[in-house]
Amino acid sequence: MFGWEFPPHIAGGLGTACFGLTKGLAVNGVDVTFVMPKASGDEDQSLIRIINASDVEIDTRYSSFFQQNTNTYIEVNSKLIPYVGLDDYYNVINQIYSGKLDYAATGNRRRFQFAGGYGPNLMQEVDRYAQVAAEIAKREDFDVIHAHDWLTYRAGIAAKQVSGKPLIVHIHATEYDRSGENNINDVVYNMEREGMSAADKVCAVSDLTRRIVIDKYHIPEYKVVTLHNAVIPTDKVVARRKNVKEKIVTFLGRVTFQKGPEYFVETARKVLERDKNVRFVLAGDGDMMPHVIERVAELGISDRFHFTGFLHGDDIDKMFGMSDVYVMPSISEPFGISPLEAMRANVPVVISKQSGVAEVLQHAIKVDFWDIDATADAIHALLHYPALSSLFIKNGKEEVDSLKWEHVARKLKGIYESVIY
Image 1 (cartoon, rainbow, N blue to C red):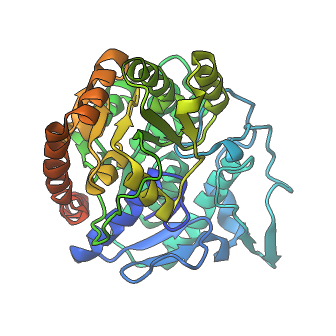
Image 2 (image 1 turned 180 degrees about the vertical axis):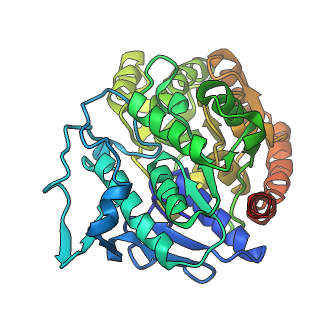
């Protein structure tokens, strides 16, 4: 299995999904070797084995066979990365292979030192990762290859070329989700389509995403399977602790076009027109942060708005422990794990109908992302009618506890078997 990140060091839902899925596969008797560009050494390897691509030497005499013909890139205005923060946002610049990445060489052997993040050499790392994947595929004994999102598709293709084993690619987000219909980055789109076309099966995280794959990438319907996400179970109880008397409404996610943060701000204005005793928290960062801050100031609601930046681990639990309502107004959300995490923490949620998670949840209020009046009404009702809020909290918690990764992994195991035999 090829991924780009794995807990505890993640930038968003992709790493969380990889963690849950690998644990679920282990429960279902599937041995997983998870390959990532740069491991930190503190990843949980109790049920899976992790290979650090930065530790793998490749034979340079054969590496050119897997080298892609996309050595040079031009600067583009697109949200290329599915999970990226404001501090890590980058420009794709002209990149030539020589001298761009550090490496250690001995004779015909070379080891690349991957940054493992989403920095300025990302595209080059994608191609280098594919070369390392080919080397790993020559050494390892395995039955099937599984590649997560476009960053790893070329690695999956290279492994398939070497081994002849079947390839599964997993779609967690598409370029249409990240950038919108009118701002598609052709480089990323082509890499996504390349991976999907080479795959024996394509796993989409929702029916919504499956439809995009079929209609926009022209992948045959029989080849694309919906595989909804789940949530990692925990015995931890999120403590309810709040140091302010006002109600708190929370947005937690990347502050990018896809997530609809501007609709959260406009909804906040609507709610505050009816009730001043509400605080809004935007937890996350991204390229739209300056625009969002400016809009909050323009609306004169800065004293009711809080910006926390990107939250990790226990800080997320603390935020949920303060929240009275969680809102996900995504414009195009392939799935969306964060509402499940909020419900697990006993927080009622309002989600957009344009999200994959809306396909599996019954006890969430669903609205169109653009309908700020309906979203404001839903928030106001959950804040002011305790019986309604309690109903969504109780039933929501029970519902989300039934969405287990081991059930998802059981279906995935069946997909593996369908391409192996």
